[in-house]
Amino acid sequence: MFKKSLILIFLFASVLYSQAVTGKSGNFELESTRTFDSAPGGRLKIDNIRADVKISSWQENHIRVVEYLKMSVRTREEADRIAQTAAQSYQVDGSTLCIAGEKSGGIDEHHLTINMPKKFNIDLSLYSGNIDVDSIEGTITLQTSAGDIDLKDLSGKIRVNSAGGDIELEALSGECTLHTAGGDIQLTDIFGETFAMTAGGDIELEGSTARVSLSTAGGDIQISRAQEAVSAKTQGGDIEISQCAGDLNLSTMGGDVKMEELSGKVNATSMGGEVKGSQFTGPIDVTTMGGSIKLDEVKGPVNAKTHAGTIDVRCTMADFSRPHRMTLETTVGDILLSLPKNLPATLSAEVRTHAPERWVKSHGIYSDFPLVTTKPEKWDQPIIRSSGDINGGGDTISLKTSAGDITIKAE
Image (cartoon, rainbow, N blue to C red; front, side, top):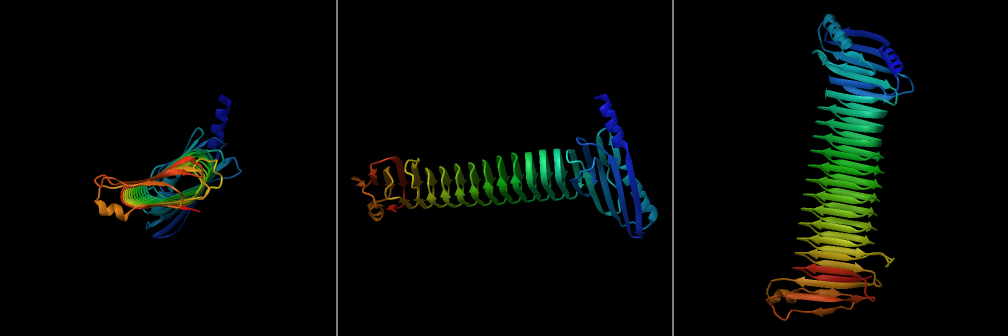
């Protein structure tokens, strides 16, 4: 181990360096190229810099850093001093290459383009600037106070934080945590467990084979092609989700929930919007405090509740041996349920109100299936009930409303 450490330090300390300052007063440019011998498993640390940083892997066993500075200083002497300061910001500490220290004033643009072995660890913290990392495997920590972050083909343990920009991530394998205080997050082809949070933007997930957790305080969430469990929460936006096989936990405080082609277990909650969707094969549990619920092409159990809205559910299952228990409840609104005409079930429906007699006479339970209906004998407790076994009886179906009609159709 001792010999290997000495060799690694020696290789990392071997530097090839070229630098040139060009231009004229008010418009100087610095272009430099530095090459550091290295080996897979090393570490790059960038700290306290304002710059756009682009990092990608290559087949060589060394690191190449191409640096570009655009300077608005008046004299070449000032430009040379900035160039000297830039050269002093590079340090080698064992297997770690450090680029640290804020450059002096007079810099309008600063770019770092870095190539390194694929298996490498990165610790990057910027005052400001965009970050672009491609095809790296290792422990990766990225932070910028003002800039976008674009990541592709990463594996390992990834931690990403932007105080004011967007984050894009494609082809991730490993464990990942993403956070931005004021931007959007876009995730594509996620193969590792991922947690993504934004305080003020939208989130889009397209394709995943691992557990994903999404949270936004003020934006919309769009999800498609998720094969494993997804948790999505927004404080002030809509949720749209389609073509997913994993279990889903969806929550919005002030928006709608739209769903399509879902085969896993669905739990969806909205505090102030509508919940609707189609093509469900797994169990569904949906709740909204202030909107309607509409579910079409349902082939599994349903639990749907709203405090102020209609409920419209259409069951199209053909395999009656599968579970198909249903509970539909609304405080204020109508209930419409469509069932296959041969579906075996034990059905009960109830319309309840504390309103006077004339209200009871204007609402009712209407069914294509033969049910036994009872009406209140005393109008101070007006309840209309219908119940019965259809097609020999089976899983229970319960329908309740306090101010509306109940309609049951056979298809």
